[in-house]
Each structure stands twice: as C-alpha cells, then as structure tokens.
Image 1 (tube, rainbow, N blue to C red):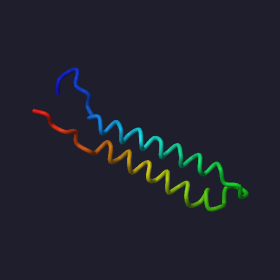
Image 2: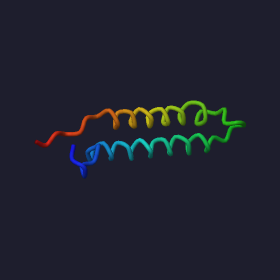
Image 3: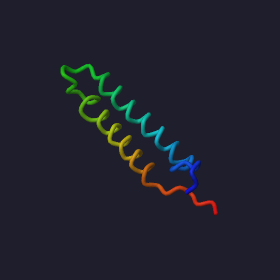
Length: 70
C-alpha cells in the first residue's frame, strides 16, 4: 500500500454512509413513537430493526475487500 492510498475503496465509503444514514433513521423512528415510554410498534420493532440493518451494513462495508487495480 502506498503512503497516499486510502485503506478503503469508494464503494466501502458509500456503504459506510448508507449505514450511518440507516442508524440515524432508526433512532429517529424510535423517537417518533407516540406510545408511553416508547412501547409501540415504532419504538420496539421497526426502529431497532432499522438500527440493526445499519450496523450490518457498516460491518459489510468494513469487511468488503477493495477492488485490486494492478
């Protein structure tokens, strides 16, 4: 690896941004729940699933090997 070469490729960074957006959307969804203490569908089901999807996208972005251009 050259000194100026980035550790990830462009697709890795795009996936990371998508993951961060999913994480933010999940937390916003959980905060929109109108039930007391967040015990409704948004706070207990949909929001956590979106947050989990965000973490899975982040893990995939880190583990995806960058394309080799030799």
